[in-house]
Length: 188
Image 1 (cartoon, rainbow, N blue to C red):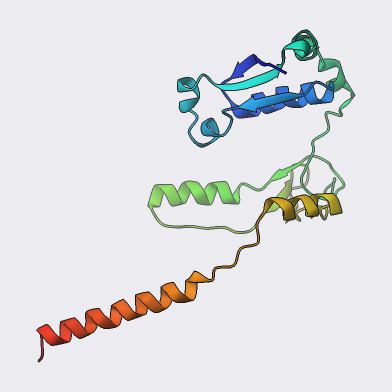
Image 2: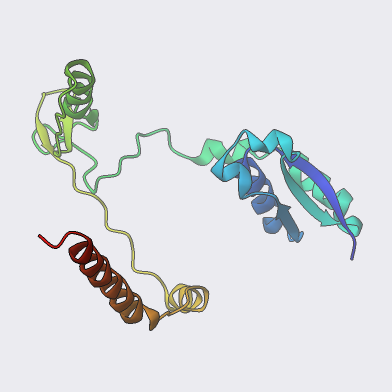
């Protein structure tokens, strides 16, 4: 199996989306050099971008899968505002024309202008029809599946730090020795 570079992307997100399209089409793909541009995106040019590699036998199918136009699928998605709240309408008038409150943005601008830390923690929705405001309630994330939990347990090592007490004792001993040396040099 010889891997061939199909495309090179400046942004890791674009490369990941292309890889997802190929995975959906049943074509195995590999991303190389995707982590460095995530940390410092200017390095993407230096390393030649994030490379999407496929097997040389799947190159024609991969090109066809990436060239496929899927914009018609977007027509099925509703144009209605998607909100991160569990309420889809104003509790007072029932209108679905609401937006986030500008209090946080205004306080941030005042904070920059006055050099004083003005922090507003409240997040609210404001109805554009009647002006009513109500608190935003975040939607709780669903609990992870058993398969996800097991995979995370495999990835994350459980570490104990047996050297930590010894390190603390060593540092404490050094501090005592430094103090004794100081007292010897300066007896008064």
